[in-house]
Image (cartoon, rainbow, N blue to C red):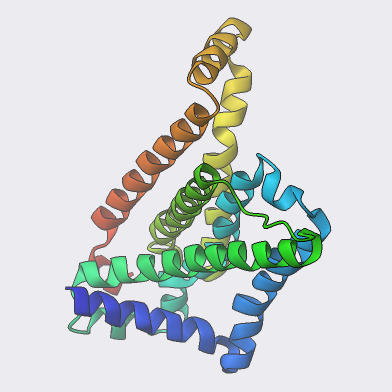
Length: 246
C-alpha cells in the first residue's frame, strides 16, 4: 500500500511540474511565483510585523488553501477531461492508493510550499530588518503555523477531491470548490454574527477564559473534525465502477 501510495504521489507531482508543456512552465506558476511573493515580496513590505504580528497564523492557514484549490480541482475532473481517468482506474493501483495518493500529493505540495515560504520569509526579514538581531517566530507561534498550514492544505485536498470526483469539468470543480471553501471559512463567522448578543458575549468569555491559546486550539480542533469528515466522505464516495461509467 505504501509503495502504491508513493507511486500515485510521484505521478501527481510529475504532472504538476510538467503541466502546460514543460518543467519551466510548471515551475514558474507553481513554485517560483508563490515563493517570490510569500517568501520575499510580502516580508519585505511588512517588515518586522511579518514575524511579530499575531495575525500571522491566519495567513499561513489561508495560503495552502489558495495554493492547492485549482490543483486539487484537477485531480479527477482533469483526468476525466483528458480521457485518462479510465486508464488510471484500470491500473493495478488499489482504490485507496489512488484516492489518498492524490490527496497526499496536494497536501504535500501546499504544506511543503507554505513551510518553505515561512523559512524564506524569515531569511528575507532578517537580511533587511534584522540589524544584528535574529528575528524568529516564537515556539508556540511556530507550532501554530505548522499545524494550521497542514490543516488548511488538508481541508483543500479533502474538499477538492470530494468535489472533483463528480465534477464534469475542471472549471466546474474549481467553482464549486471555491464556494465550498468560502462557506466553510466564512459560514461560522456570519453564523456567530447572527447569534444573540448575550450568546456571543458568553462564547467570547468562554474562549478568552483559557488565555490566547484557547481560540487557536478550538479552531484547530474544528478544522481537524471538518478535515476528517470530508476525508471519510471522499473515501465513501470513491467507487471505481461508478467513476468508470460516469
